[in-house]
Length: 432
Image (cartoon, rainbow, N blue to C red):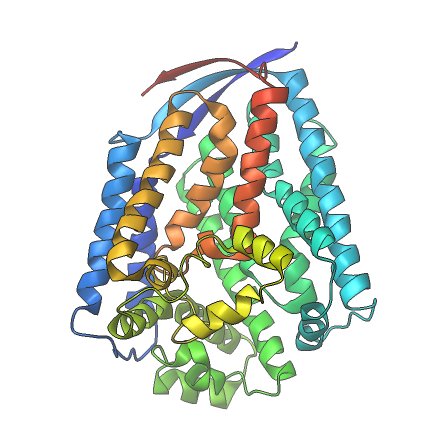
């Protein structure tokens, strides 16, 4: 049989935004943190206005009040070929990335010391190889969706499991190498959206409970990675909860600090440390935005953050300096999260940021509307957008290096699906 059918649920992006905001508020309520507000008189209002503009842009451009269910008739042979193509492109990128980072930059001297690895990786490198590796390896972000799409339709292959395992290697590569967790977060967000859209995992009390257990385990794991990283830096992990850059406006409460000082990171104390650290990372960005908003009355980075990768390529070819140095000089406090709106404010100023939020929202909503109307070659970009939106109150993933590579990879895969696999989706019946 060469044709099959799957019920695909396409979520409204403005509802994903609300869901992300709700989760943020829940974490903020539970967080054992003594927050410090150092923003301007209108900082909170500016944040709320930007959020409303972004929400309104998503809602109006998407044009729907609720999700749409599509019955997708697809060619199983072509889907199988696309899965293999995406896998091989991802593997090629991962090999290039390992070669460039481990053997070219670090000279093969990778150790278990995250900070030593970071210093080695930050120096030297091969620009074109690094670019190709980052772009192609980002294809692994879309492999889980394609596989669960096929498996949800009842078509299973033994090859799916080693493929998924190797795509997970891409997700944890930076965690193992230098303790960076952003790649894993993006990968898991895309996976979650994929299984929900395809119905591979259905919402039930059992699955919600298992999901909560998995979330707690991941929070603990991320906290322990940070504990090891701070120790390797020569910093007391508990003291860092009050002294680190991310803790300036979100320091851990005195009670938690005293508890951890007496009990360390063993057993339940490790969970408390991990949740507190997680809460600080998730919630401090809003207070950072309040602070920068009170000090920023004009553009300082002039679009270099929103268009980081294209700008970096142009500046590198023209040999007109490092983009990182210009961005660092243009921000109030480098190295901290500033929500979705912080980089936009730096790039375009207070007034321009409002228009930029509207523009970005219209683009995202337009992509969602195209998918809802059966133009499924927009699916890769839709997945990336939906993975980034829930973090709007935390960080702007659209402006990160990995985030922009992911969007470029999504655009490339969309073109491949449109031109090389135009007969993959035979029919798409929307209803709902």
